[in-house]
Image (cartoon, rainbow, N blue to C red; front, side, top):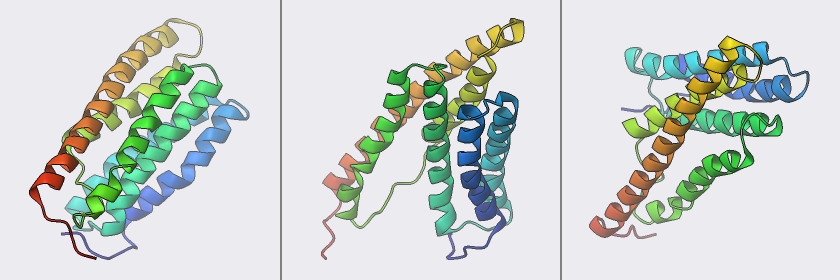
Length: 191
């Protein structure tokens, strides 16, 4: 059960992840220090894994953590698609369709609130999509060079990108279907 605690190890990890978002963007768009940007992405991926694992193992699941973790994921995805599209590593249409899914889901929140919910629980498909994208982006950044390693990184990066975008939108459709089912099976909450 989620507690009201704010000062927990998992929440600190999520907060560090949020603080590193502008650092990543600066590294990619400013001096274009791609190696350091890759390190920031790797740290983000490790802390993303650890915050959930530690929350469960230390029994430090919190309401704020349930919000911070997906928000940090969304900010990273947004920062990466902006950075990579400005650098012409990914096309602009990709930079648009990823955040568009989150805008679509955000539009469903008012419907959830009519039934007394503020969000739906994260499901495995959404986590798998985010994981695929968090693998894809560092590979695409690594692939923005010359040589065999860059060529391989580019191939695997695009494979993870296609898979991740597909899962990301499929997960969004499943969330929308959950909202629809909730609307038809539960009573409206009286204000």
